[in-house]
Length: 435
Image (cartoon, rainbow, N blue to C red; front, side, top):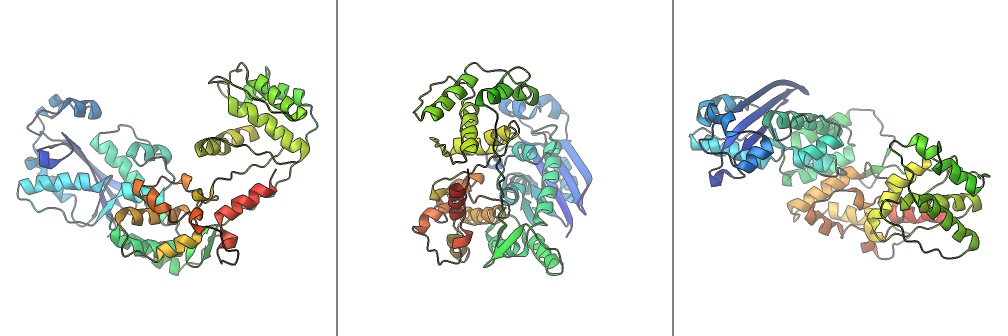
């Protein structure tokens, strides 16, 4: 079956059990990975649309006053779903509403195989900041012209599904095998798509050069960083002039850059502390640009003296911000090479050894555990750090993850076959060797 029909509904409320009704239907038909048809109609719910729904969707009572009722359009709508997968972003909501309305008029309910793009996006794009349709559209660079309107949402959901399917085709056979084991407990009828990918991989000579596998688990091959730090013979004062002053690097390279009062002064105070080997205590107001102000002298000092400098933060969120935002920014501004790595507590790093054991035990897993395992299996193909903070886990999945963290290993046995592959050990080794 290679026909997929996406449905999105706008309704007067959240539940047909509360007599909420459909006010707009949007349908998008996909065949052979192309959008081939669309359908949209207002429906008269025979009740007043609540103001919060009007504000959310922009659909007014006047818009639906002369629209057909669901009964008038029921067979026309149901006809779209012959011999296809039904796709929705939260399938239980849209299909539940649609089947409830069909049942009201003694029309057979739809029992097609289903695919829920919320669930599938969680699995295939586990590092997205969120899984609402707007967030995913932003994450995947899908244009979303008219949020909370049925056809627009259905169209974006169709585009999202095509990206999900495309991502699915990149998975190695080891990951596919594990997902096939988990699939019966997922909401989506994913077996056929997974099996087709497995079958295709059995007859291909494609080699995943960025993937390693061990004991049935596939993960991203560690990137070998070969830092080539070089000295920098410019004086610190000239270095700061080049960065901070008029026509300096910050002004010329950063859009909307404004010189901040106290930022350069903070960089100077910190360097004076390094030179005098004394503590420096600084209080700076919001908007000073404190992170940049202390990173610049720290990096300069580390490279000049060929030594490590440790930056300790109060929260892991700030650690991640420094590594993912501030340090890449500084790399683009300064004329010399430096290396940086992040070391968190062991509880942040996944343990391959624990994961291997848990993947063998699925019979008693609830839905959130199955979903968490599926997300982690895909994430392993992308992560270089093994830091679970990269993944947007479901709430109960966060609790389950505690069983998978390196913290649960206690003292890691160096004779373990997973020792050389441990993310925590790798992070610790990188921390010890880097400047």
